[in-house]
Image (tube, rainbow, N blue to C red; front, side):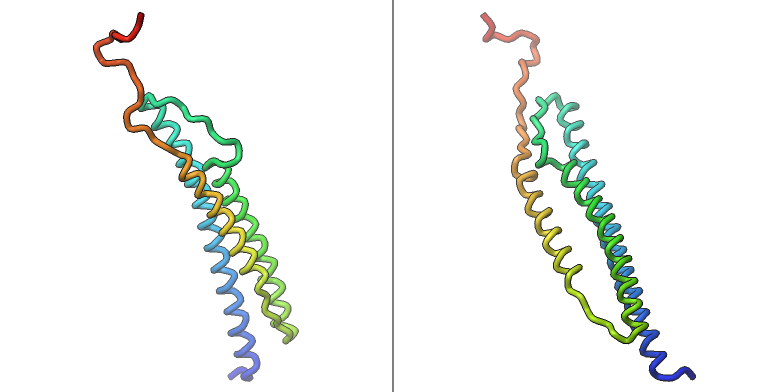
Amino acid sequence: MPPPGNIDRQREHQANERTFLAWLRTSIALVGFGFAIARFGIFLQQIGFVMDQPAEPIHPLLNSQVLGICLVVLGIAVIGFAGWRYNVTFWQIERGAYRPSRLMVWTMTVIVMVLGLLSIPILLVRSFDPSPERPPEGGSNHNLP
């Protein structure tokens, strides 16, 4: 039977790995949401085209594609930061000098809140007119001179 200190260290390493895997799942979710949001904006544009609705001007910064790309980039950055944090924690456990850090948690909290707040104007600006202006089906427009 291994000495009690080795079992505790083994548990700490396993907890470190579980934490890393949680951050990995979070990054995969961010990339997935980003991809879905970016593609959903394109889908809405295509639906508008099929329904003969006039194309709305797209804001250069506040649109679903930019938000989606930001989420994908954030997901990639999260996995890089998680790998770095896993390695730092691994060596702290090995040296017996573990120091918890809340930096990653607060950084992610602020970034996701900011991206969430930026998505609100995208949702509010997008308006759909259920009755687009089209000439009557009869082929003639009686209002023409």
